[in-house]
Length: 451
Image (cartoon, rainbow, N blue to C red; front, side, top):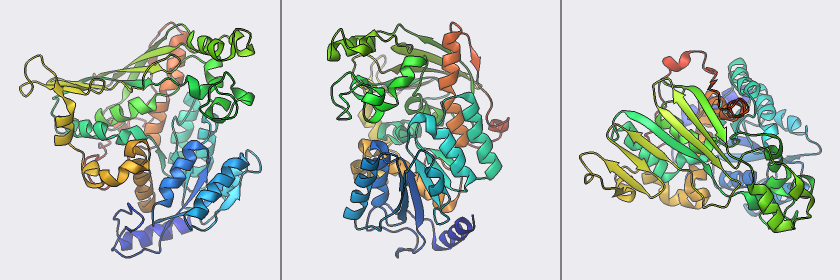
């Protein structure tokens, strides 16, 4: 950690401004020699997106990349070369070669974008190596893994940030601003989820990531190679953080409030079987499989402060994309679907307002300041802001906006939903990953224009 302490000390002396574009440097307005040296574990589609955004910054050195797929390594090296950057060290000779990357003393931080089953073990190893750790969603698969993230953070003092980009969506941050300014009054109820037809992602022809086809596993490519298998053997909400992450910020989860209990139910599972038959025919071997995950999984969370949160996982049937946000308080509510809002005393009685005028009025300081630049960074600009928050937190070696306790609490929805469904909707208690400290932890200051 000597290089980390030295870096933090020098960065503190230089200042803490943002490096937001290729020609903007942080600190004193001059190019700062103290750059954050970042390693990437996983340079698939998501990891490459992070790589591109990191390469736009003057305060970053991409010092190492790791992937077991040589084609992805070569693509990453080509991208780095075209940007005129120094060639990074390369790892990926086997599944454990990432540990050799973590031994590099010059690396300050690591971003992990690998298949789910590797997330926690890699994050643990990264924190144990003293690297400021960015972890893609979801962070963990089991309650044991959730505790592993928290325990390793507390054992090492090394920070972990869950890289939930939807927390930085323009309308989401504007509504968070409304919540913090008490526009909706005392908060009562939330809805969210991940409602996204993923059939063309979870099955393909083994040649193109989003091509038509009925293959997965060893015969698949990209996410179909590893992600689809979960639905064959498990029944629960596997991907809750895009919805619940933004809601957790609005509800001050782990900071004056916490998830208390969850109940979950799953529908029948027919979506994948129908899709495989349509793509590969009645005789395709995969059409005979019995899928365990219900096509629509619905969970209800109760919080210690008395709010309820309904979370929906709906990825196996034909449908347009939606995260299904609804934010409701004593004085009004916002619904993302329909782009509508109602504020008692401001809106016409029993009539929705167009959300746009309210989103514009309560534009979050980050989007007001950097929105034009951010929009080209991926996912409508969200990816810029989440990477910026990671980099700026890592440069100062401070707790990130979404920390190890958040990663654990949000990811715990997956195993707890599985337990509830397996027990006919029986309520499951959330572990208190903060060990009681949620009572006194202060909410993160989201309403600022830095990160």
